[in-house]
Length: 229
Image 1 (cartoon, helix red, strand yellow):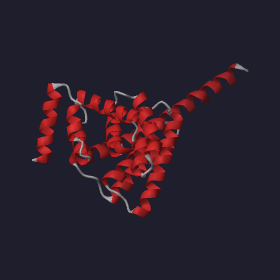
Image 2 (cartoon, helix red, strand yellow):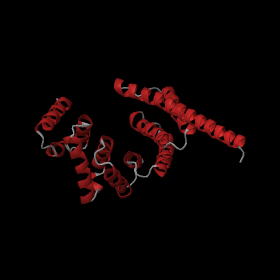
Image 3 (cartoon, one colour):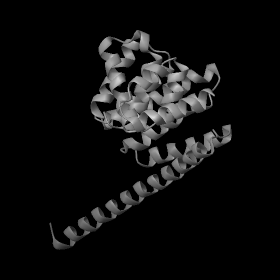
């Protein structure tokens, strides 16, 4: 190859890399804007209108399409749809379609990042929301907890799904849920959410029994009292 051709090839490669970096940067910018909107909703305790949900969904999907190899953008779409199912449940006719779409995105994210603990946890949560059997959901939770035992998000999903399926879980699966919740209590992460879940499922005494730390115990008691007074 002549020097001129070599330089031209290098210039083309540099241009291609620059364009790719610009596209990825735009995808991140679009996704960050959508995440900021969701964070503002959570902070304000609101769920957004139908049009607002559609706008955030469109931004996250655009980010996914701009950077299809980024598992994070696919997972963000799935997370949004999952939150929608919980915070602003759609009609029954639409619910199945939303679950199917979220599950497809989560599976695609896992295909790209198979060791991503939170992706396994979110898949378990989706299957739980879909009403699937415990024997199909529990292995997903076990995988998530094994990959990310100290991740607060994994611990919270394990608590939410585990308490909901408690009677259908095996002894080993219950131990996994208890282990995840105990770690969450010990680190004092998600305490308010754990208290609400425990009260909903009638497991507040069980939750209190998982704390050996005096400070965590006091905080749990305070939260329990504030909810039940």
